Image 1 (tube, one colour):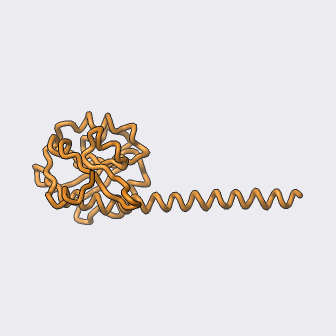
Image 2 (cartoon, one colour):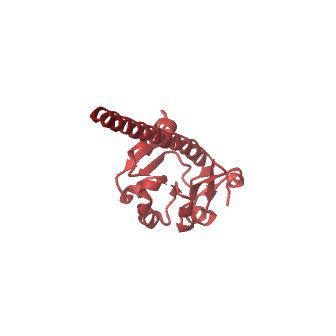
Image 3 (cartoon, helix red, strand yellow):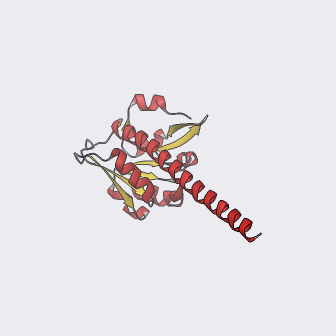
Amino acid sequence: MKASKLTLSLLIFGIALLSGTFSAKAQEDVYSLHAMFIHNFIKYTEWPNGGQQIVVGVINNASATQTLNQKISSSAGKVQVKNLKNADEAGNCQVVFVPSTSRGHLARVLELVKGKNILVITEDQDMIRKGAGISFKVVNDKMKFQINQDAIKSSGLKVSGSLLALAVN
């Protein structure tokens, strides 16, 4: 009887460990996909100063920062990714990514970047209505994105027509 309880406990523990590993891996895959999109958002966005140096700040998410850093940081130094401990550091970036784990920081980020040439990208589609410039959205199990043209315009940025054409509502 004790052996079967121990076996069952070990089995449950093993499943819990594996499911945590799979979900962590799945989240890393999502951040890899986000990185590809963010790379193209940067490529098809025009900053008034020419965007010589692009700093992508990720609000308080080491995992997202690490994945984005691996995928989009350039050896030439044009794009750097930094983990921001809090929203108050957002003003020193050209792009701010607000993962869903940091959605509570969005209002402060938007307050700090208002009137500055900073592109705010969020992971949650409902944040587009709160003032984010670009938000990710899953449509039919595919990653898509929405663009808030008013937010982009008020930040003094220009997004190419090609990028606008790919956006969904």
